[in-house]
Length: 428
Length: 195
Ligand SMILES: Cc1cc2nc3c(=O)[nH]c(=O)nc-3n(C[C@H](O)[C@H](O)[C@H](O)COP(=O)(O)O)c2cc1C
Ligand code: SF4
Ligand code: FES
Image 1 (cartoon, chains in turn yellow, orange):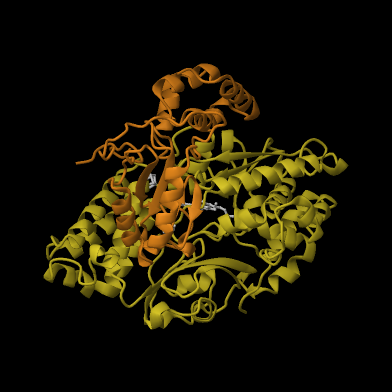
Image 2: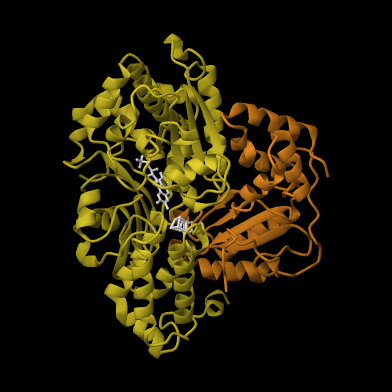
């Protein structure tokens, strides 16, 4: 348990971005080994490794691959590099430090599922990361890792790097495919799942950047090696993006199952300014708040779910005792209001009204019934929205009302935020 | 202003690259914004022509995505994130400081045409270095008032535009100079109803 660099182990190597340097650290040997295997054997290997998707839902990667209907071609792989969940900045870190590792993962996944054209959908704001990947793709093409007859093995593969343009919803896999087809990025109904009817109506696998980065290591070292790291239902490591009130924010690659306490107190250097921990939030904006009593929970999909939140995309937002929980929830709600794609009514209207009510709390105009009104609206969004964005917009605010209802009450009785120090005062 | 030749070529190449030419819409919009600094109706009609698609389709797509600009902005583009993880580390204070130093409101361009700035609730993916700004698509992290001053100074004295309108040999678009009017922020996505 603890810090365990697998994906990040060579990140201190200078010029790791360059193909020659990446190869010196063992880069592309995983792909070469994969090319010697039968694609089906690769799928079985990844299944046996227990690798689960790092994009948020934690779905077993090998299983997802095996859902592709037999004999239906072409097939597509889309690498999800849209990372926009507030609190997350790990895919960016992987892409800018080792773009070839991302690419190698994509090559392995493509070969395993029998895809000849793969896509990377990267968020529009990540320009330096786009440039890093672009350069890596060019180098890989020249070295024969990409193109016709890859490494003389009779396998053809091309990769298209596709830049988004500022829409969080395009991280949702079906919205991503719609966006990639050139339309407004609205989600589609599931089923049919992308594995059956995805990009251009063809069988498609969507995998997160961190997920594919695991593949070269699994192929090289085997399923048993990977399974021995982490927990029985959560093999491997994850990058945790720590932010907020800690002394040392940043990315930490931790073995799954390591207690949250170790991440925050040891590696993050504890809560800043010698203050006390009030709450933290794993998973990103969507996920429920947890309390100091949950510090001994393991960094693991299942353990965090059992504690009442979700590991999501691996964020760890730390909040000290001076944090206004109402304001934190207000920001997230405004984010979801801004990012709601507008397709379905519960989410489009519900996030708008939640944001309005939160503004009333902030502005000192909230009325006694407003707390229950928020809960009521949340209840009417969750489970009634077209896609998980709507549902998730209610999870953090509702969990904050559950644990910190008195702070909402204080905003009503004190006609404004009891925590707020004036912004002018702070910068004067 | 008709599209420059290299942009047209690029759009045609894009159309051939994807299994469906419609997939080239977003990359084509990027190519146009890269050349001209923003995307006009005329440019969208040209994209439509080159892709052989109806202009309404290009407009429908373009209006969904918040990064496509519809009007000229300053030479440099400054965005400060105020979502919760950044808020925890003082993003509001930095946004207020930035506003005071630039002397123009959120969404506006400084009178010398150098900088357009706005705050955003979209996390930009740099919460570990909060408070942060995105300056011409590069992250500036761990902001302090002193660092903000230095960045502003650099941008004001840099005569060349930065991305997304960085095109080689392309002139800086001229924003409405001297106006301290907050340009209405484009809503992220047009909504069915908003009261
Ligand atoms: C609103 C929303 C936003 C999402 N954003 C992302 C994202 O930015 N990156 C990502 O990899 N997955 C994101 N996902 C999850 C994807 O839909 C999908 O499950 C994932 O990319 C699958 O890859 P994985 O199996 O490797 O995790 C999002 C899901 C939802 C509902
Ligand atoms: S839940 Fe929100 S984001 Fe999802 S389809 Fe409905 S409006 Fe769009
Ligand atoms: S919340 Fe500001 S960069 Fe993530």
